[in-house]
Length: 242
Length: 242
DNA sequence: CGGGATCTTGAGGATGCTCAACGCTAGTGG
DNA sequence: CCACTAGCGTTGAGCATCCTCAAGATCCCG
Image 1 (cartoon, each protein chain N blue to C red):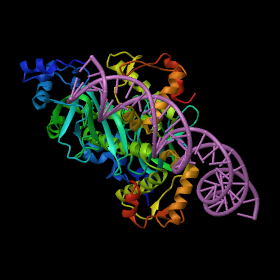
Image 2 (cartoon, each protein chain N blue to C red):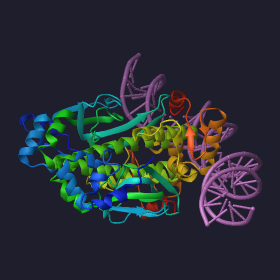
Image 3 (cartoon, protein in one colour):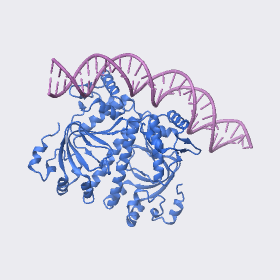
Image 4 (cartoon, chains in turn yellow, red, blue, cyan):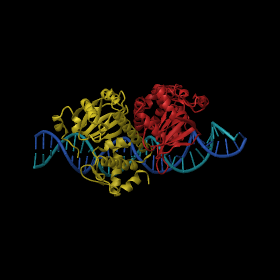
């Protein structure tokens, strides 16, 4: 489970919150040594937001960048008539605002309570020249984001509803594993609506597809939003059409 | 039209091809000063490939990076059963391989004859520490790519066929304008198939949609793959559902 | 001209959407 | 303590958009 005692510890070392950061080994800060980390820490502010609150809004001036230290964030874009495309979900350790543009390219909303480490964008940009490790790290992160985005293009453009849902579950599973959580009973904390808007489907189709996968024995729906993936190999094949 | 006399000029200054580059003010090299450009130039090789040839293949070790100096390149990913998702089109001045990963995340194929400026990836990475301008520039480019990718996610996940086609035409138009070409009779050099695979549609749907737009007077299909966009405002509204 | 590739058009059908009702769960207030 | 409600998830019936399959038209290059 996610470390939630961070604020308490932090209060005792206000000048160096990073040293006590619960996710410091996973976030981009890990590219920094102690003095560099101190400079970053001076820019950082811990903030907490309740569920359903908006963290950033598409089109706004990009004043802040964030590390997610606890909770889950939904990133999305809207069309004028309200259609929504979820572009990603962020978990503890993920970075919000990699694209260092003047305005945010998408909105972000907390799913449940979220804790964030907030940095002023111009401050980070000012550090970039001084901290080459940081710049290199950001470039690597942006590259990885691009690869993820391209996988998602393939999913949205060419996969069937079933393939989309299976790909999504496998993706969640892989990311959970990377965070040191279990790969198989995977936690699915977002609503069917959010999943649908991520996969380019409707709530009903997501629900129906999960039911179908369950009756076929490909997955098991457990209590507390957990989904068991009994045969990864089979699911991987299914996610690509076999 | 694109400057195609580059090779001739280059032969007279083999040690500094960059100085004669037809797209030098548009590519990432523009971030460099003269001595820096010289170091880049020492790594560069001009190559030409005929139409339909494969430039890179998804999954291969990423040995080379490229600048497109003339022609058009199609980027795509494949599913095992042959379904194809085009992730982008590159024009003169665009960079191929921004994601500095060990392996290519997608394949690239020449649409018509293409000229490329080729760099060894490890060579570029070796320069990154020395040339901070270059690293900054790559980060900016990656950021812009990410924003583009997110727009494409919205398109693929939530737009109708008609909205997709109109968005595509506007996008081509905007990029042509950025290259200094005309915005309105826009050149559409790729096949209906490639467009369909880019928009998550079939050839037939693309064709039918264009025909419909034509009969409604929203566009005009001209000779030589040119399409006239008489009312940009109207098209912009259409691309978002109004 | 001829012929292959590309594009267009048509008819029928399937996937996933819309609209609607119902069930479940958790939180709330009497 | 329990009824009530709101939100979310599931299920069903009918339908629209886009796909599939097929045939014809057009273009381009030799």
